[in-house]
Each structure stands twice: as structure tokens, then as C-alpha cells.
Length: 253
Image 1 (cartoon, rainbow, N blue to C red):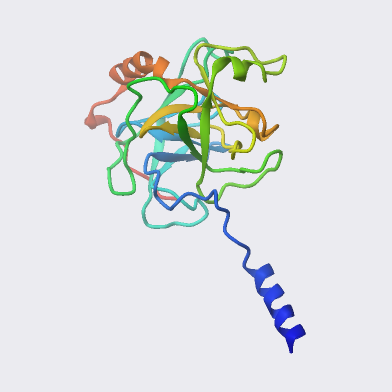
Image 2 (cartoon, rainbow, N blue to C red):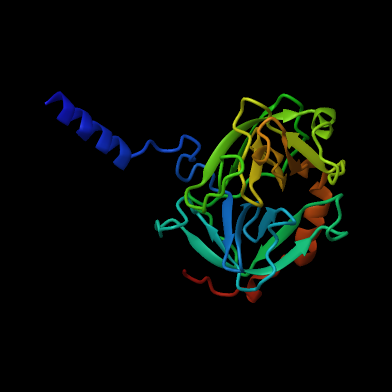
């Protein structure tokens, strides 16, 4: 009888593995956007009803790309989403420079804000070393292991001082004042989503640049230091935000 109970218990354990603790509380990041349909997938952060901030590496190259807002599990339709075509992409110049990794994505029609879809404020100051921040995105949180996107993941990371970060750089990486680093040994330091976003004190402070922590968990990962780009972001929004007369209808999956 005891042997039978043990077999049943082991079977149940195998059939229902524990949930990954790095999965975000559903819809706890209402600014997170899933970009897909243009030959790949990645994410960014909604900062305005028209605009998403993401990394250079994530910037869509196809007009077939769709921005899905209000997502948690990207493999099912949850009834909370809005799916909107991407209309324009503005990359920070000079393109493909080691000095910048930032892009703005304009939606073809404005997002409707709901409890599941909200913009995140831009930074009013720069993060400080030792400050606790939160990174979210779709992808693997296990170093050197691919995982297809499904649930939104969240990790907690400490901001690392610039010199400590530079000391971990490989030969092909060059330091830029537009970089900020976060994560260290003995922390969850990997989220392999191009365009994952870093939030500190309730404000958007970074987008993914180099996921060094996914190659070696002892190394901090590199993010774009968005507090240094407020002027550029505001200029893009002023120059490229359309009037409502140019709206294009939303699409469904």
C-alpha cells in the first residue's frame, strides 16, 4: 500500500511541476508590450498611447509587426489584449553604433488605456548603484538555455556601478555613457528577451542591450540608460506623433 502511494505521489509530481517563480503576477506590468509577426518576437514598454520604447535589437523591420498590449500568456487569447499594427520605427542614430541601443515604435492607432494596459512614466533621475530594480520580458531566465516565449517573466536585480560592469566586458564590448548595468552573482540575472525592460522606483530606466548574465550569471547585464535619453525621446514624440485623423483600425490575431 505504501509503495502504491509513493508511485501515485511521484506520478502526480511529474505530471504537475511547480510553477516557475520567475513568472510575473499576471498583468502586474501593464506597460509591457509583445512585438511579433515580423519574423521574430521581443518586447518593449508603452510610454504613451502612441509610443513604445525598445532596444535597437528589437526594433521591427517589417510593417507586418503587431504590438500586443495587455498580454501575459502569449500563447492564448486572454480577453485583455489589444493588437495594433506598428506604423513607424525610429532608431537612435548613428545606426548600429556601439554607443547607442534604442528605438521608438509608433503604433498605427492609439492604445486604449484599461486596467491591463497603462503607460509607464519615463525617469526623472538616474538609478544609483545598489538600487533594486525589476526586469520583465518573455523568454528564458536560465543561462545558456533557450525557452520559447509564453508567460511574462520577472526578475529582481541590483544596479551595479559602471567600473564593476566594465571589468566584466569581453573584448568586443565597448563602454558607453548610455549604458547602465544590473545583476550580479547569487541573483536572478538572466532574461533573454530582446527588448526586456528595467523598472526602478516605478519608472522606466532601461531596455535590454547585452544579456551578459545569460552567458555567465556572475556578470551584470547591460541596459540602455534611459535617463540620458529623455530629450531624444521627447523630440521623437513631438516630431512623429500623428493626428487622430490618420488612425488605422486595430487588428486581431
